[in-house]
Length: 303
Length: 330
Image (cartoon, rainbow over all chains, first blue to last red; front, side, top):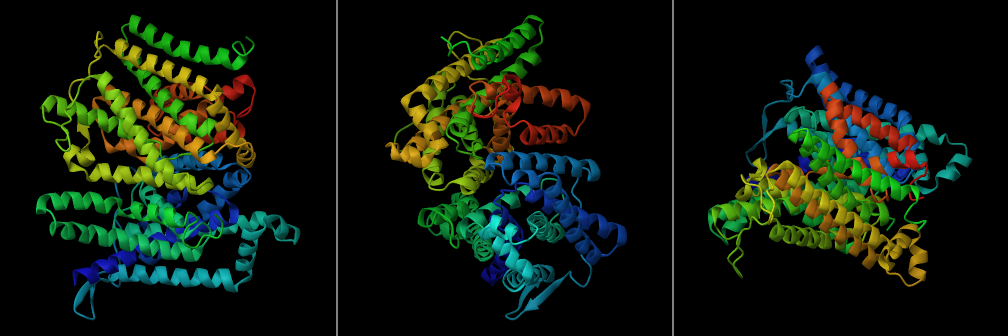
């Protein structure tokens, strides 16, 4: 029973990471850009949701606002800063987007203060449901799993079945060539960046609803999203999906089960502390193993 | 001789002399706070010099050097706390006692930093480009979370030790004497970097950065060379972490955080990548900005962000690059 609940938690966590990693991996794949400020867009979405939900009283409007605000912030940042970085080396990209984090975080602190904000879920989404087998599970976490799955299907459809998707894939393969064929690359890049930003903002709003909305909430998730992208392979949405679920499951189940498993071997109190320490580094061990076996990631095309 | 007297060399000397002059001037004026700030600049500069070896000369964009900084710090904190409690650090397979002698602590901090750099580097250097950045970041983050959950040494709250470690013949509690220790170590690291980068090894490292395939063609093995540079870099940063722990008499997981990695990188960039004294200038400017901008606004990091953005977009050679009118790696 505990296992089933933890597995669902892991699935929910993985879906969340997928929303973050999908945008990162798209931007890596298409533009070759490393974007540290992705976590700031996640935070932007969360704050937009909290502010709009508080002002209008509607959580749904807040969710819409998180998508819109993060996409708008993403488009703005792309046009103002990111666009100048595509031709630069990775070092410049890291620094410029690190600078963006500082600006976003301090801006959010100035606007909203340092105290965490809490979102109130509407009655239709709160409470628990009884799953087959008698397990009580929070409804909203199931909704998040549903949103994640829907986004995964939507992205798959977008990339493989639409004209925009064809252009994105073409842009990944050869940017000069599709420019020569008359595609407006600058606009395509802005759209891809805004799309990734919107997904991050959406993830921020959803996580903000179960935890809290505060400055700096994006960074831990950003680094986990990096781990996901490294495991899945740069530029691969499928890799991001598989990697995110792997990381989500490993982390959640590791934290839930490791202390118990260790207590079979060593005495209880040290099993608890050692288990907690081990569980906290488990996903990085997973990453190291993937790096040793396949340095280009599970689904990475380029080495 | 021309080598000694070129514009870069003069600027290197001026930067170091300025740092010492500020500390001495503040000491004579009885301003211990400014001496401590100069000490902090020297320590951060040392960390930057260490990172510069990998980043500037080796082209290895490590976003995980906080790992070595924090390891150096934790080694210092753990040894010092065991020295004051009298309990051995480990008893198996042999007994290691704590220590409050800087001369004993530094080699352990550097060794620990070097061993960690060997392990992280051996894995990370299998990748390149964006992967390398993310993987180094992730490994540093792993240590960060490990430190947070390691309750034996303070966990999230960090670890305090109440007495600064000792150095024979000096009173390390006097700000100017501790500054002198840090400045001498910084100078040694600068000389070491200057010698190493002009050696066969240093030239091979730079060749591998500029054109890896060509380097391979003339018989250089980039992996081994880069790993060596990464380990040396980790050792210097570990030493800086040890000094920083002693400066504050406190270590916490914050020393291992990715924000710290970003800051060490900022020191290198503010001054200018791949320049001998660039990181020292960068660290000094960073400390200066922290206090000037911090006095103007509580949100000084946003101003720092704007400045950093401006430098990346418009002055890729860093601030020294503006003075020497030369771009990066000229």
